[in-house]
Image (tube, rainbow, N blue to C red; front, side):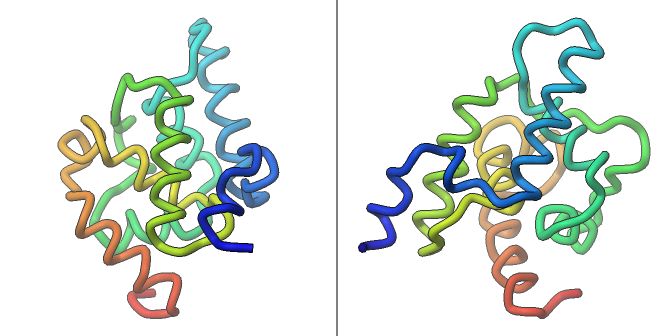
Length: 135
């Protein structure tokens, strides 16, 4: 099976345990704030609450403090962000969608500017972390 074919599976079958947990935490954040839709801001809050995984390590190595003042990332809808995450996974040749792909999806829009992290630099750092460098 080709890698791109694997990424055509339903998202639920592609998500890693941590990525699934981040999305659950993001949904909890949205509900706690009284919102009926999950956005990039909630996704970022979910990453902060999880406080582990490739996305969190990547952000830390790039100097982003998720535990500091509540960071904002993007009002973009979670469905759009997960589709971007799926595309990021495919472009990296991965057969799964992990926290790192969710982060990269988030950085496509306003998230990069809000966090002060460029998409290409974050992508490079994700690869470094995945290969055991930059830890």
